[in-house]
Length: 225
Image (cartoon, rainbow, N blue to C red):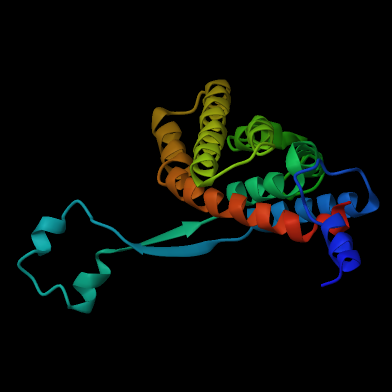
C-alpha cells in the first residue's frame, strides 16, 4: 500500500472525536428515532435454559423426555426498546443521542408512537416515566462512553443506565398511581411486569447493543462527519 493511499484511509478512521453537525448526522439521528419507534413495537421471543423452583421434583424422572426438558427452558416475550436506546447513544454520542430521544418524546406527544399510544394524555400514563428516564440514563452513558472503554466498563454503563431507567420509571409510576388512587395489587403487578425479569434482559442486551453501537459508529464515521 502506498503512503498516499494509507494517508487517505487514516483520514477517514474513527479516532474518538466528537461528531459534528452535518446533513449526515441529522439523517442518522432521524433514522435512530425511527429505530426506537420500531423497537417499541417489536416483540422477540427469548429462550434459554433456567432452573425452576420445583426443579428438585424432576430429579427422579427422565430428563431426556421432551415435556420435562421443556420445563427447564424459559420463554420470555421481550421488547428491546431500552437496549436500542443505548445503541443510539453509543452510536451517536451524548449530544445526538439526547437529540434523538427528545425527538422521540416530542413526536410521541403528538402521534401514537409510544407503546400504549401517544398524545398529551400520555403524560399521565404509568409507563411515561420510563421514557423520560431515557434522558438522564443516556446522558450518563454518553458521558462515560467518551473515554476509552473495555468490557467491564460497558457492563457497568449498561447496569447503571438500565437501573436508572427502571428506578425512575417506577417512581413516576408510583406518583401517577397515587394521583389515581390505584390499588396496591395494580401497582405491584405493574412493577413485576415492567421491572421484574425485564431488568436482567435489558442489562444483557444493552451490553450487546453498546458494543454493536461502538462498532457501527466506526463504520458510519464517514457519513456522520
